Length: 223
Ligand SMILES: [Mg+2]
Image (cartoon, rainbow, N blue to C red; front, side, top):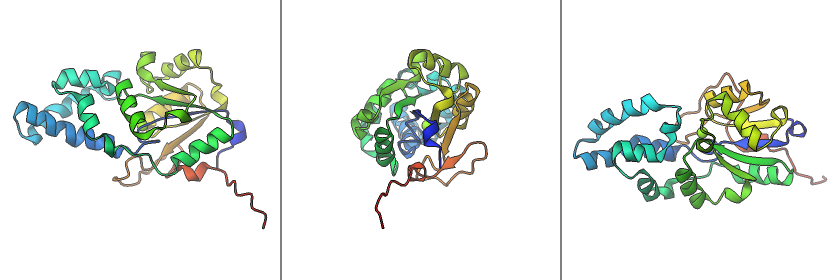
């Protein structure tokens, strides 16, 4: 259990943390190659052979997360494709309970994502999670991805938080590592960001399967 009295700001990642990463994995690994193949009149495996090295080259950069970048690079309308399968976007179990607990305990709650603003908009339209946050923050607006420790300093200059009293929950280890370098004290990862994939072993950061594991027992029934 986390020491909630020692935490007043909670930074939450979106994809793979609040939302099932299955959508994003399905989208980029199946839906994009399938539509790129149709557009180029090639086989899906040929499409993937073209796309994969492009993605590998940009992994962890702002371009990698930019829908505009991929729309231009691949010649297919990525936001439109996302909307076509937006019904597949889903909130992970116990997320609403967790957000309710944070609200009731007066924590400052920021959504902090590397996702592109167009992707964020589609996901908020679909899940209606936005009212739960004090702010929705997109790393593109800070000019650096969350993987860069400098990102957290830039964030702090604009939206004050005390790193020693802040919790970050994020399913990406390189993001947790950069936050740790920037002094964020409480760090938590997710053991199964994609519900269709196996549970991960994680050594470096404390991992939870679902958020119910960190919601204090508020059952006040007197027996
Ligand atoms: Mg994530």
